[in-house]
Image (tube, rainbow, N blue to C red; front, top):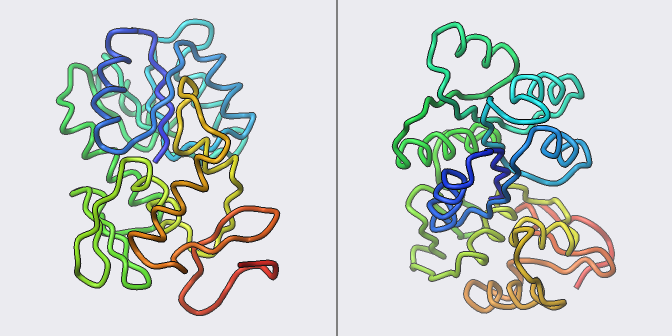
Length: 229
């Protein structure tokens, strides 16, 4: 689960990033609206955006309006000190999916993010189930046919992405961007190692290799792609 945090207060951004990292989120931080808009327009894959409104270079409201004007539907949680009813209405009308006023409780921020992610994936509950695997994003628990499975933060994130999009073929670069932040070093075979661990901890065929492209978790009713192993 990859988050873009757009916040110009370094201390607050660092605190949010640390809190979310412990919940299996990969968090990238930008401190101005122009950089954030350029990044999102370039197609960087984020599951959700946490957006401050009082940003330099381009304010958050303008960023949000331009984002929606380009039909970018990434879920956006506005995080701001502007607590007036009119401010909330304007933010939601501009395309925000949720609105949280500073100061806030970290637990509430996490709960709102979980709700946004569920809605964006068409889920009612926080748990994903497929092929005997059950992943509960709220409790950060994974089981296979009822038996608990212990996963690292990055393994959990990878499995969540695959379960959220069964049948979708992910390239190695896309998976790396979802699991590793911009400031983290990525070994050339890192994704292969994580996939190997998931297969060992669950079952060998849980994630299929699509040769020359990447990896896929197949839907129960069939396979995706022709060149697979």
